[in-house]
Image (cartoon, one colour):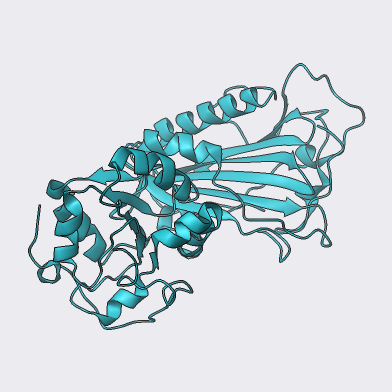
Length: 386
């Protein structure tokens, strides 16, 4: 885990209907493509029964891989984990992907965590960890979701026929992630607005929220159905869990980012829009299969410093039976969260939504810092990462 000096991590927790072996193969393929595109050595395919191992794919480029059964969760329960460390300015970037399932052909739960490990306690963080490029490539292939929240890379354009599904999602008591709903100014073509404004605005949100944009035909019907939770005029509203559309007071819980703030500073608006979804996603508890994944334990050989640099033409594998492995980063011998030292090498409805929505007593109403400044009526509208 990151230290107090580390940048805020990116965390994604989701489920895919793909079985475990297909999801793991897809992750391995995308990781290999990423490494190759960055000029690093491509890792060799991993055998199913192989022990935990470390591949050294370049200078300070380490790929740890382990797989195995989930103890106490049935004969078909398995997990796979991939941890990639690459050099970065003032430290190391770490990307951990963990997959787990309870049945052989059942759905797979996945956790993706990206964090920056500073080179030392005196190194100050210089910004949030961005959404990994691998997430943008992986999500469209997985049909991933967190409960009733579909996790997409770009906002889905909604027509009047899609509104029932959106309202059902907003009111679903099992929804744990935010739902972000964007409007389009009446005189602006939807395609142009989405390309020029919305796509950059939501770039930090993939994996953290569901994303929608209301078409010109859907917008007035949505605002009629949710009269206290309107969004219009180019504003964007973040619907937190537990929406009560019949409550005027509840509307204050769901922050609105008005068009004026977006136009004033698009980059700052994007960071502001992502802040609450990122916090909520990072605090989600792990589902049962993922919480059963054991701690990553590499063999002693993978942690030893090299006697001499190995050949650069092939990825070097360190397994339980490996001998004479390449160099090891001292960060691997540090306690979880310790700063690593540099390595030596290496959904049409206009009916009232309240009749369908689950509502609950007010619980922990949290007001966003920007709700007070931009009310809806004011706008023109990982386990084992040791």
